[in-house]
Image (cartoon, rainbow, N blue to C red; front, side, top):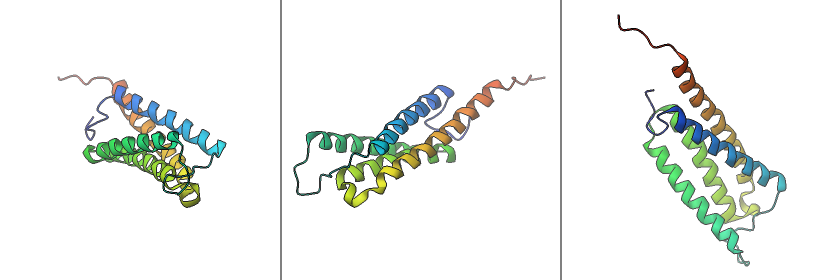
Length: 138
């Protein structure tokens, strides 16, 4: 499969898709629960869990941004761009709080739905390539 530098086989594509689905379910749960994020930039007391969540989002956003930079094909770039935007909006929402960036909750869900759709296309592309019969060299 040409055009891929990270999701180079079906197994990697399925693992990436599974991660996207899990994080989509977490984001949807956060959206439905509607627990407002206080933010770390506000002059109020910030719970340790909020700092930990900010750190996790910062690490994940950085890794996804790096994967976006080193990816080659347009499908792979779109997949990692959607994931990066999702994690980045989660970071901004957690850091700034819902009063400043409430849309981050919805952006995360929309970007993860988009990532899942592109991930499904990538897995389908690999599945289609495996199901085609090998051509004879005569």
